[in-house]
Image (cartoon, rainbow over all chains, first blue to last red):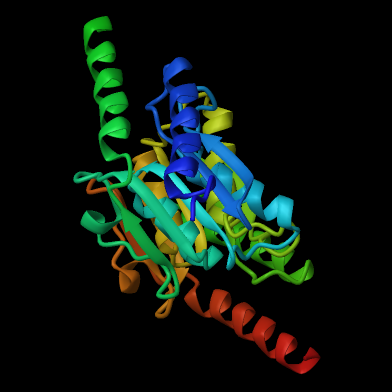
Length: 149
Length: 149
């Protein structure tokens, strides 16, 4: 059966968010949260614009999803994010007890796994979906930044 | 020399924040951030009221301090918090490159150390200051909750 709403469909939505961040001169990371095949929250990195280290795409999406649901637990939700979460975002996801985290590119320097962080034992993890698209956008951003300095 | 503004003075301010959380039926954790002997930010846990797992005392204080300073790095600041930060808050503190973290009570279940998280290598850590006061308030809260259920 063809399903129009599969993981790739939703990761592409997260990539659109990442592109929004790119266009605002932010490290291009985007996230969306889905419940029952519906996007209930989205966010993109705004740490520079908001002058706030906590303004990662995932953090904004978690807050927005809880707002939408009227409850702080995301037990029937999936997060799609274009870069592996950092330990801060992994910690927030841990508290939210989210069902499923799908991420595109690995973060070998500041990803939650290399930093020693943990997701909730109930959280399913899928990695590598549209990794190349997400990585290409990140690389393009850092090349642009380097050339401007 | 007598210094009116020592670590104990500031931790007492964080305990006042924790009491605010207690009075709102939130897990009583409070935090303040100090720069040049001045309190530049404060926060207390509001996860229930805001329905938001990210609304920890430290997260609010980090955002408020960056707002006050007009920059996202807290390299000349000290955080006083009544409970050991969780991995989410440790991650946010890591990104902020804060100079010093002083916490009162240990969190042996969800503290960043037992969860495997990390503060920034440049961050000095002091623990156990007014631990008993902070722990007593937490215990009182959980006894109250148990009796209500």
